[in-house]
Image 1 (cartoon, protein in one colour):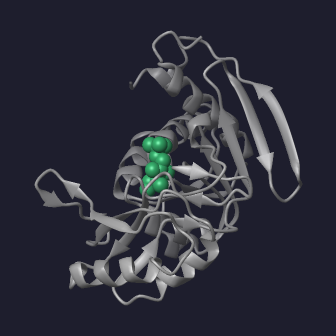
Image 2 (image 1 turned 135 degrees about the vertical axis):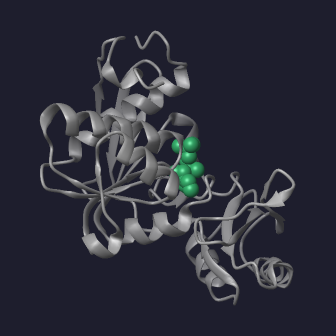
Length: 260
Ligand code: 5RP
């Protein structure tokens, strides 16, 4: 199976392939960011080219916008689309309630706006993203550059009173310079280790001036599609309370691999 692909890429690819089955003609679709979402964009592009699927894609980052255009998806802004039928995105962690930590790729602000403006959010993941408790992955918090060190001190003090194991934050770097998001902001990654009350933490964080948005997605995700390296795919639907398993078969010479 997938001769050229590593086990992890196979898992991401089969999750993406299953998730794009949810896309129907004429839909307005939010396009996530990250390596798993990139598989989804390529796979969706393949459906557009081969089936003549007519959709509008709203990207959640400049990277995704570029890839979507390259693979033939019509790209529009959220303001043009206004409301979306479906968003498909990756995640850094998801728990049993399908609450998420996102922002490992630094795009959680646009991702949260787009997912919230969608009837349905489908998350695609490999099995390593499934956790009992959120928090092992550092929680990204987008802050405006003005006074970011003061904002960091305020937020470390504020989270001390929430149910977390760690309270330190680090400014995300891109080489020697601070990482800059598509909105021109910085990211502070919070090393919390374990989050006891994600809902409360999210509210506390977003009260602090200077914080634009945190990477907790609470009650936003409807479905998680988990791909496995052997081609199995699980779909968990939190609203329906269902879990199904299928298998994706694909040829080694699938068109999707041509641009790799
Ligand atoms: C970007 C994100 C990504 O969805 C998340 O980081 C997962 O990325 P990957 O699929 O590369 O593991 O939230 O802001």
